[in-house]
Length: 252
Image (cartoon, rainbow, N blue to C red):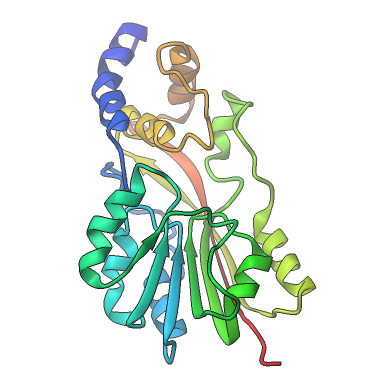
């Protein structure tokens, strides 16, 4: 497609991105070639056994916690910093008895040893603060997007933010404060998004990766990327990376 055709194709996706909230993306993506070898909800359910108080960091619109509510402790809290998502999370989680605290996940406003389960799905966190609010014997479960996720994009957008190898950094930081890692796995697979628009929509709703993306200004680079990554049926294929880490705070 030429520039004008591309912009016409992308216009509804740009409008859709402007109204985005929550973390459940309504995009068309095919099943991965190598599905995740773990089930985040199942890992959480196992870690929640016997827990009496839990916290979900950066809950987004509260979608995941709401779906897992039955396997979580009665005393459950969530945090969300973004002013767009916080009210969405409140509306979804308040009826389930889950208060939502608006704050940064890097500075958690709870007392020491408050929780025996802390969760973080695709949310940054401070290992020392997580350790502080965990009770002895408590567990922390996190699933993260690898720093080299969608690495193909960097060939056309070298300014894309690289957050570094947090998979190993988190493990090293926990080890340094005496918290053993029970599980650490990393998985890579190919994801195929059905259309150019689906993928550009995700780029627009993930501004931490390309904070200055402007579709009209950057349309030539976006088209060059699409031409290189396009599948025979018009999709766009990229490598995705997911990581899971589970730690337990030792008893004193």
